[in-house]
Image (cartoon, rainbow, N blue to C red; front, side):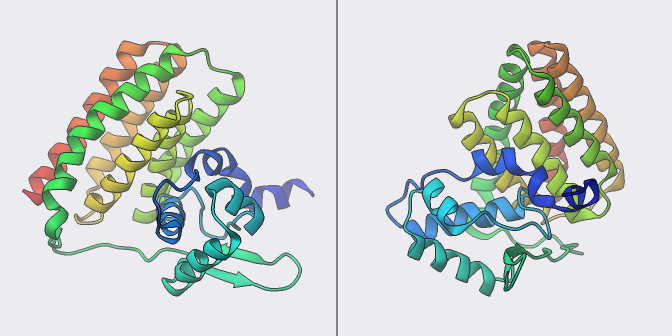
Length: 250
């Protein structure tokens, strides 16, 4: 494989996150668990547009379900317009682009409104704690490179969807540095709820600029091995995002 081909394969860039995002399904309903994990991974950009899902055997083993159950979940995701099957050489199950969502009026969040707004409190505790733990651990050169690359991806992302997904990958990447499956799971839940809230408000360019600057401060603190500064930087980031959301959603 030449350098150009390797760069063109989005699946390669997300392999570390794929490994931590897809876990054995805990619920008794295997289909629902598979669907939720795969849909969340696609929505958060862990599986970017154009990437190919791992083979069925690997996915089924990773999530602790039968291949028949996995196929049902993949079929449902195809119906939802998130996946397509490509036959022939180089085929597989490929991720489609998500529709751009730019609402002119914030939609009603329904019965989940209070739960979603409460998730902002949960996020502040969990993600700030994740930064503290990540900055407390010795990082390898590979981990530092991953963190800097994720930060650069956020800065150069163009468009609402691309920026949101790159943002999520950075936060999930920080969670992986903790080495804690529980923290990774909590940050995944936090980012999924945050995604729902952010798609309910219009994009504000000033907020994106502030957010990118805060991301840089967070990453610098983690790489510098400064747990207190990393925690404070993430708390500020979470507080500013919460203030924006509460201001627009009430």
